[in-house]
Length: 324
Length: 261
Ligand SMILES: Nc1ncnc2c1ncn2[C@@H]1O[C@H](COP(=O)(O)OP(=O)(O)OP(=O)(O)O)[C@@H](O)[C@H]1O
Ligand SMILES: [Mg+2]
Image (tube, rainbow over all chains, first blue to last red):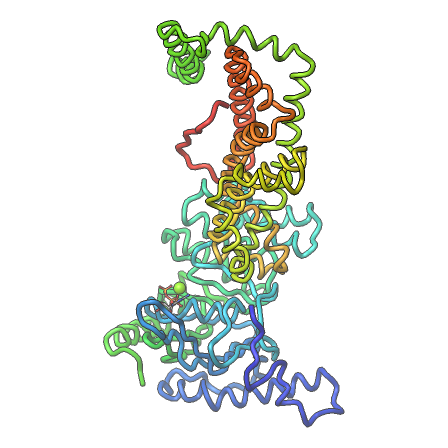
């Protein structure tokens, strides 16, 4: 991947030029604040203003710090059919540390592409994404992707796949194996440790992919429809497991899904996207108590209202196309 | 106990061989031609060749050249093919070069190489090297090109450097394809080995064969053909066995091997 060299420069140089005497840590904070201020100006408030009823009530709580900042990102693809295809247009989004954020939108609206940009696998045509204030220039073990296509290593067994990350990170074999076996059990594949990917069903592969990424403890999970190929029962179970892990570790999660239910159930924030070009249509704060238990939540009128309202918006965006 | 079906499957290759030899035997008896000995005459000449120290040394010299030519070709071609498959720049540089060499029969280069390097081992080994290289490069290239991008991304996210990804992801992912190329290369090594000895006669299995032909010892000629053919079958079966072991993870459920193993 080529390093990007755009107007904003790398590592926030433009923001810090005046603070020569300050310590690095303080500088970084300053930079963060700076960027977040500008984020609000360009992105979030503008979007959120359209749906004031969803705005999170102002709390006295200290605001969590932003871990991922997506700043006016656009992505143009050169396709053979249509010459320039604008897959993402002017996306700005701030994700706070420890937040569970879902991206919801119709097929082809650029959800995966946005995830790849945060992962550092694709560099955006314009704009930039940052992690902890540093420009994202490539992939790294701080961001763990779970791909829609699984992308398991076919020459490794289930255990070998899950152990790959920890081994690469220098964890001793015995330890990596113990951790991996526990993870494999968690995703419900005990007994399949020595199976090769070709011997697994689609849903099983998806679970291996999830375990493989969880195994190396990334700070941010980038999940692209990780439960898309699962049956309803396994899906519910894994949603609960994911929530449990998340409530314990408070990893930041960026979660792409087609399912409104799933998005509301899991998330602090749902980002609704619209298609052609891919834009953020609305950001909805899900103000439901945690820890969330499925059986309680399904009866909760607030949960039901979120689902119904978002589904309606989804339908509208399908009919009306992008909000301009 | 083996079921009748399994027995037939087991015996099928042997039956095919016996059938082929039977056709030969009948044809040669029917034709009554001096230059077409019967199977029995040819087979009777085999112990004479294998018992003769000089012939044995010739065959061993052939095998040594073949092993060196094949080994070096594989060691050079796999990395080159993989790099070409993953890097546009490398591919753009080597593609025209290979496309020029590709259609040229490697044996046709022998006279020129002989002029430069003489008629010894170096020339013959070089020709074998050239013959093996192209299929191995081609298959490594195709294999590397087809590696799923998300697999490389997964590796990158785990912290693998580009070089590590090439060795630890592209190489194993492309291995089935690479080994297909190597198998073709192995047979080509045998073919170019004999051809090179036909052109630069001095030593080797090909030397025995063509000398016998010149002297009208047709039973020896056919015995040599059997020996060389058996060598090819044996090497190929051996290789196929190793290959199947290495890429067990990728074999489709319904597998029909094309080999003697
Ligand atoms: N490598 C590429 N080259 C050209 N166009 C691409 C490429 N990748 C994505 N696109 C286009 O960008 C748009 C967004 O694709 P993306 O895969 O991000 O959609 P998505 O929201 O993840 O869809 P889905 O929900 O079906 O997975 C699509 O219109 C697609 O055609
Ligand atoms: Mg997608």
